[in-house]
Length: 267
Ligand code: MLT
Image 1 (cartoon, helix red, strand yellow):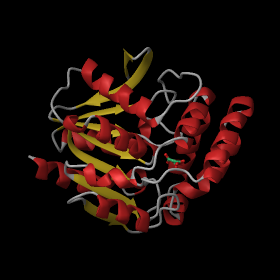
Image 2: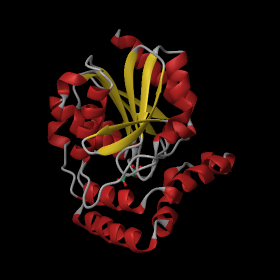
Image 3: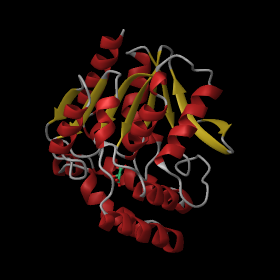
Image 4: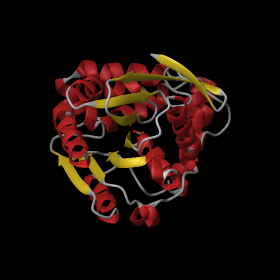
């Protein structure tokens, strides 16, 4: 992985290929490796300059204390692009928490976007109950580590068939979650708890958009993702059958094909 210092922290990222800049932004509490089935394929076959960072506090990137908001992470990514000298419009692809970051990026840095891909994410804010649970999780993770968080999340991430058909995939994701820095995991939980509801802003997104969801996503349901697509002018909606929340890992061929089609249509 490469490393670069932006906004006072060292970010680690993978960079492959040349062509349309494509930023792949991971979910919570994961790292860039959730995109392993996309990185080489989209770089080698689809002519993309793929950049897959570990967000602040995750994977090999440095963590910071306190609250890290979705806007903070969007600012980190804009600064990363600046450091890499990328000033042409990019395609931003985010999954779940990466989608929360994508919304903040789209609202603040609209002119930097050639396209927006939202995978298995939500536009609404946390309910007060969910926000309170996240604050409790943040405390617990700092005191005792991430084992309970991982045990609670794991059953919601994959469709049953994907989980039973590929235990190594489930196991390796669990390891990533457990190995993440508790400070980063806690800071992002607090940031997600205070993220704004962006439903009313969806109509302001004026770049081409692709919305991808697994039909069995238990966290961001297909119905909820369809209403996100309905709210973004001209957005394309792709629902992937027999697939849960981790669509890029569970159904890489379908996700790669949808992304490749979307990027080809931008040119
Ligand atoms: C994710 O996959 O990033 C999380 O499910 C997001 C969340 O906890 O809201």
